Length: 74
Image (cartoon, rainbow, N blue to C red; front, top):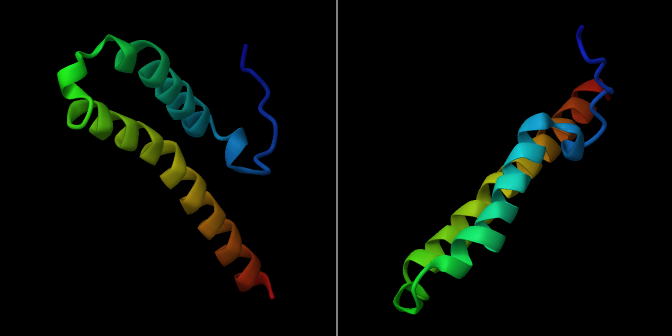
């Protein structure tokens, strides 16, 4: 049986955003603490930035699309 989905009102409603946000939390809580101290400024920094970037880019793109949709209506 198909799951009934709510209408998308914001980027928080997007499955892809929810999945990437959860993945970001896994990186921060489980992966980063296990990396060696020597990787503090290289690998850890890159993982921090890249894991935060994916949900942020989805949010920014969704907000841009919403603004474009609003401007095309008026």
